[in-house]
Length: 191
Figure 1 (cartoon, rainbow, N blue to C red):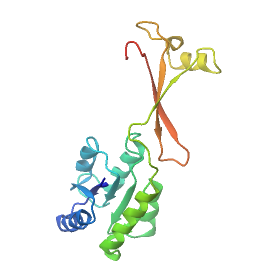
Figure 2 (tube, rainbow, N blue to C red):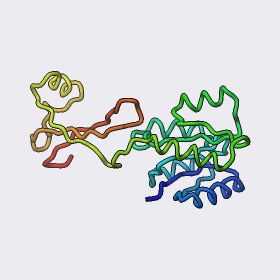
Figure 3 (cartoon, rainbow, N blue to C red):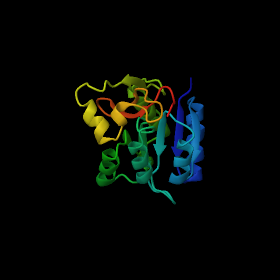
Figure 4 (tube, rainbow, N blue to C red):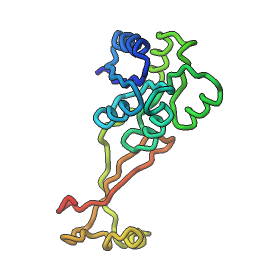
């Protein structure tokens, strides 16, 4: 299966050149002309990696990187910054926001860009896209009563049918150790 890459670049010439190169290298390529377009695409598609320019109109690459890395549904997608800027403070800022790497356009050949993309993809944990866990929390176990009270969870029972609530945990592998986001739901009412 071909890896899907989102190329976010406002220069049509650079975008077309890299679209051709990446397609030739067997990538499925999506393109966005600016940060807002990238966010819109990410609401519908989940690429394996993002190649992200920093200096763009409407929404810059830093903002896109921040949105991606703070959204639990997107945060596991590696982002390679692909910029004309190469100053150390720019590189540090991108890496601190969660970029998997930083490529300076002017000094990096297209083949080297492809190598960087493949390297980052080879380090990405292999996880099923929709892996999640359903957990039962017993109302008398440890801090369950406090949890129910703090979050107004009606003693961990459904307010409609009084069935015990279950916890749906979704892993986030973008951290060194997995983090989880979760929500309580009723298995009977599905609410």
